[in-house]
Length: 289
Ligand SMILES: [Fe+2]
Image 1 (tube, rainbow, N blue to C red):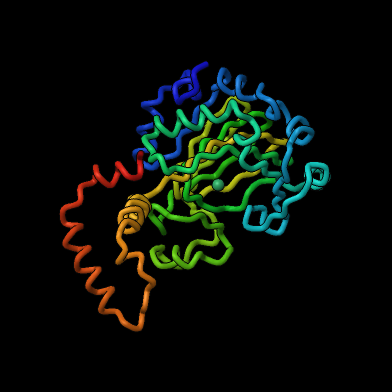
Image 2 (spheres, rainbow, N blue to C red):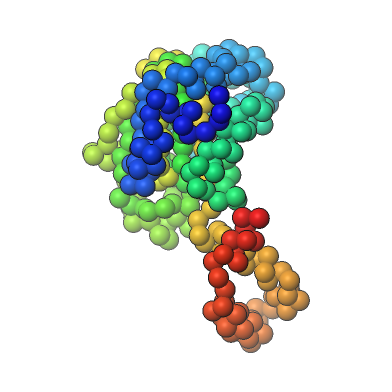
C-alpha cells in the first residue's frame, strides 16, 4: 500500500476531503478498513495492551480534573496501565519516532495537503477508557483521527471567536496572551449549540480542520491513531526567511541598544526600502529549501 490520502480514505475520494478542508469543514469517512488494517498491524498499534507493553518512553496521562493535555502528567507505561483502569485517558506522543513505518505516511500527507516544509507532522496514539474523553477545545493543527478500536463520539462546532489560531485553547482554561490579542473575547465556556455529532467506529477517519471546536467521549474503550500537522502561517514563513536574511548583516546582528533607537530607525528605513523589491518566490526558496 502506497502511503497517501487516496490509500488512507479509500474508498472515499481525496478531492472530497480537499473540498471539505477548503471550506473549513470537518471530513468524516467510514469504512476505511484497508488502510486502518495496515496501520493497525504495525508494531505497538495492534491493541492498547500492545502499545503499553512495548512503549519505550513515558506516557502522558490526562488527569480527571480537566481531561485535557492542559492537565496531564508523564508516567511509565506500567503506571499508565493502572491509571487507565481508573478511568484516565492516555496519550502516547510522537508515535512516529517509535514506529518508523508511520513516517512515510506523515510525509506523503503533508505534501498532498500542500503544507510548507516547516510543518511539524506528528503521530499520536490515544487510549481512552469507556466514558472518558477530552474537554472541549480547538487546536492550531489539522488533525487526522483514525479509529482503530472501540467507538468514540465527537462533537464538532465552527469557531466564531477566532480565525486561524496560532495556538490551542481548552474551554475553562486561561487564554494564551497572544491568542487574547486577536480572539473575540470572552471565549465560550461550553460547546456552541450548532455543534455536530459524529460517531467513530473501527475503520472511521475524521479530519478536523485547524481551529474547529471539538470534544469527545469514548462509548467503549477506544484506541485511536492521529496524524497531526502544525503548519506555519504566512507570518511564520516571513519571520523565518527574514531572520536568515538579516543574519547576513553585521548591522542587524549588532547588540540592541533600546536607549538609542536612532540606529534601529535607520535599519528599519533601509529594510522597508529593500523589502519593496522582495518576491514571494525568493522568500519561499529560503523556507522550502
Ligand atoms: Fe484536539
